[in-house]
Image 1 (tube, rainbow, N blue to C red):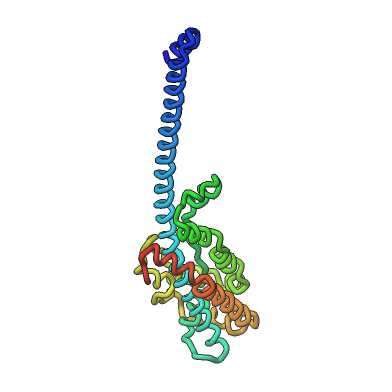
Image 2: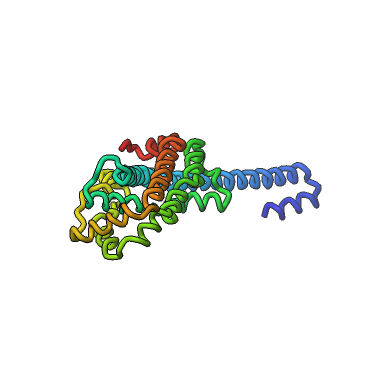
Length: 260
């Protein structure tokens, strides 16, 4: 209707009416664009809030995972140290305690990473939706830090682990795994973090089986050097998590509101 009236007014050379009709069209288009932009801005803000909350939720789980790794590998290092000391003339351990310590020094653990939100944001180029610089920076550091993958890779490929698996009788290894292996704890459970691998255990092995396994540890010249190498690697990983990347740990703890 507006266009038809504008044409009729143009034919009659009613310039004032033409100008009014054009002005009406321009104002209408302007209001429509502003409404569209406003709706788009509202949608962007809504998506930003959703992604920020999702990212915070993921990072809270990452914070728990970080603490589990620190506690777990600190315990692995402690067991490796005890076994190495006992094998090299340091504080003695009973045969059973030495075997358990030597076994637990072989162990490694990794967490399922909660990174779906971060990967979605980076793959679509929408990481800018995270308006809080500190949150964005923390996420980028957590999800690009190599130490989480490195500590698992080192555990899987540890020469000491391979030596232990190669030389110890299978029934001894299976019993140690059943009776002294890792405890799986629920995600978010901070109370059980310190008992993932460090808990009292008594492997159901005969005294002869225990003494035979310990004799292998004591008599094979490779055992102690490989155990010392394992200890050094794990201590480096723990130092990375607690010192080198300590500020990242502080950020995660603050977000999670947890101070284990």
